[in-house]
Image 1 (cartoon, rainbow, N blue to C red):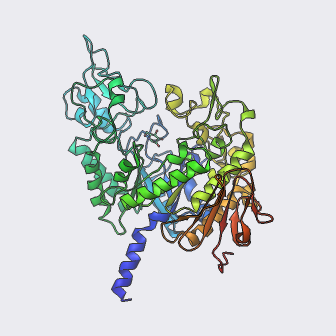
Image 2: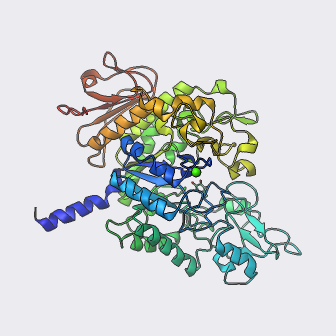
Image 3: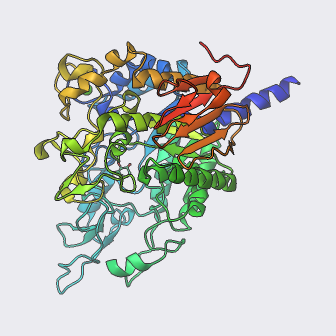
Amino acid sequence: MTDALLVETRKAAAAAWWRQAAVYQIYPRSFADANGDGIGDIPGILSRVDYLRDLGIDAVWLSPFYPSALADGGYDVADYRNVDPRLGTLEDFDAMVRALHARGIRVVVDIVPNHTSDLHEWFQEALDAGRGSAARERYIFREGRGENGELPPTDWVSVFGGPAWERVEDGQWYFHNFATEQPDLNWDSREVREDFLKTLRFWSDRGVDGFRIDVAHMLTKDLTEPLPSRAELELIPQDGKHPLIDRDDVHEIYAEWRRVFDEYDPPRTAVAEAWVSTPERRARYASAEGLGQAFNFDLLVADFDAAQFRSIIAENLAQSKMSGSSTTWVLSNHDVTRHATRYGLPALNGRPVKQGTEWVAAGGPESRLDRDGGRRRAHAATLMLLGLPGSTYLYQGEELGLHEVAEIAPEQRQDPAFFRGGEFDGLGRDGCRVPLPWTASGASFGFGSGAAHLPQPAWFAEYAVDAEAADPSSTLSLYREALRLRHLLQAGESLEWVDTGSDDVLRFVRPNGWQIVTNFGVVPFDLGADAEHVALANVEVEGGLLPGEATAWIAPEGLNPGR
Ligand code: NOJ
Ligand code: CA
């Protein structure tokens, strides 16, 4: 190989790092608190970089750490090019990036382009400048209906519940798809577009490797009068021309962003958070001319069930062929009930079941939650996912096998979805955002030196990092081993299904001969001679039998995957 060719090959490999990466999501305010004020911070992350290296992940994705009034956990951004002073400084951020890069870990940050915080200087300017001003053009302001404009322009509801319009002092109304404190931007404004290009360059120049794009499918809107009613809106197909969701013209924005990403070497990556109607429509976000990758959330609404997993996997692999991107797998994130808990509850499309007026997942009768069973099924599902082609997004705390925290009193809750009665399992998302337990004892279980910003239950002690690190049978040890071995099996982006003769057992083989077998049922499955080559499993494989609710990784013959 010539030197030039070698350089090109290396460049191409560096540019494709994201295709099969294990990406660990950090929710910064709940990860580690270095100064003891109860809020996780950037120096806290810096203090845990060796933990991240030992875990074996390829990249971290940081949920927003920008200045914010925390009306929506930081997804209400007051300044896109700065660090919340409670979380640190830009210098702290740079030091964290350097430390992660030195350990071979890439850094992805969250971009929230659909809305700003109402404290953003643009929105404050819009309020002061009054109707008809250029400052209001950056947002979506309208006159109200009724004799004196006292009724909102439409009866639309926000994602978090309650009206999607808010009236300001001079009588105009502004549109917010999410909380009242999150006014939607007007993406017809060239100034808005330019400003986000500046933000992407700002973080890319600081060495950030990629971006996660919040509600990527909602930026562009067609609000030509007359506006449809809520009932009419719900009947409009989401095939590219819906007034608010997944419009075809949103991709013009991402084509422009792609040109910015490609200014860098290696090109910056992006992954879209896009809840759209079909896999075909999702593929558009993942195209190489656009963001490059899109989250697949199908498993968040699936049961622990072989048939559902198989069809979701097959469909998403087909979809990634279509877009040329790689698949993404997600079982938990900061918006959903943790998967150990989902799998420990009576099944209902993967969502917690409502009992009377209570949600079992959060605050409901403890007796309904099968803690150990949920965790075992979570292990089996995660091991299967980590064996699939494509990239896997892991959420902080799942490597400890954490359950959703139910014990949070209403006055201690923070999630606007809880207070506005919107989506998200009825009790909102605080239960998966409780600060991590690092030590089995001590103030806030080693999260910081004082109380944590959300209360941690006593049972967190059992799941603490120090306890699990010392226990070879812990969830943490299982994740570490899986992430280590994963580097061996991620060659080629395909799989072939192997017939198992059982509806409950899925088995596939990767191009280099690794096999993954998951038993979703309860009847043990006979692995035959392959049992000798089991390199990893979440349970003991005895007598050649893979027990129920378990996954085994079978090494290709002749390979010794030992340490
Ligand atoms: C999706 C984010 O994941 C969620 O946490 C947030 O509340 C909404 N977008 C609004 O930004
Ligand atoms: Ca702090």
